Image (cartoon, rainbow, N blue to C red; front, side, top):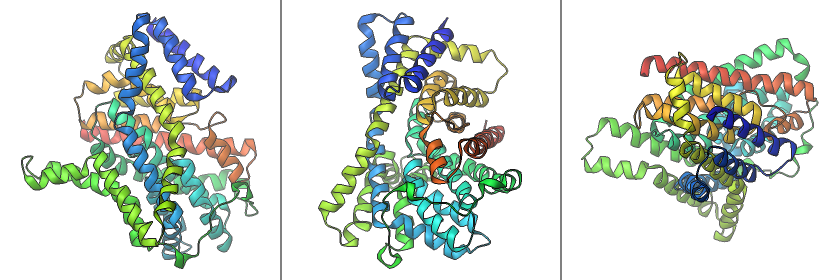
Length: 448
């Protein structure tokens, strides 16, 4: 019965989002109430369960998301993203142009959400493709694959950060292992898939693409943008601080004063705050921007993630209902008696939800609530729980299709028909997801 109730809840969620076009956050909360009633949680306790789920989920995550969004917006508005992309592309030349696009997309993708990163990078690679007389798709595939991987695998992006919290993992472990897993995943879903697709379905590699659909976007003169080094340092500052703290936690004594200071600076909240303040100086004050202008960028960035925060809170409510209703323990017990690997089980549940719901964040959050007890059995902060976070991330990008905004963005930006988008983009995200699963499973053989 518990699984049947969850299935009915997911069907209701899909119906409200896809058919009724109801707001995703509202749909999640309504579904949470319905499932709570079906699971026979006392009526008087249901509001408390919902509030606990939303509040517990958004706790310190709101700080990370808010500061991360501000940092990304400051880098983007100052022309830092433009500088990173054009410098790498000019250095690598035509032969290694895909590698340049991957590196630029990876650095920018650490600071920006997938959709925002796409809008920032696409005009740049459009110009490069035109100058080098290349199809836009040739550069678009590795770009989109890389942005998708950073969005799914790496904190401080919303889904992996929230899943890390739910599954009781350490954000530094997830970041380190996520970067390792990202390398082969990007290679397979980027250059390798690009090579195959160009030979199997060459008609999507057209040169006469019009990206006026992007609407107005800010253009920069290279000499007016921040330097390459400071742009990269600012974009990667949170990652650098968190990785340094993680490495020092393994190499320095815990009671060491230096280590304690490093751990404080490298804690996610502190790292994001310091990085954001650093960006205010390097991308704002140092660029002779007034504080009013800097503040406007920061306010605009928070508006962009407001609905994302509510959706994550709604996912937390859904998760708490599953926990309080006993579904999570039931699922954990069920999989404890199966031969399925926990890594594969985490990926499979998320992938099914992703195909049904469209949103990678909602599917990841929902799946994390279901598999949390499975991850907790490995212990807080274990390598296996970090790998399960990455498995959920890989499942959350599986087979992007018509129920996700990213599908339509790719269709319009690359001038594709519906059929072409299915055969190229939906296939690419499926390959990316499976490559991610294979990589994470391979890592588990050495770390389990």
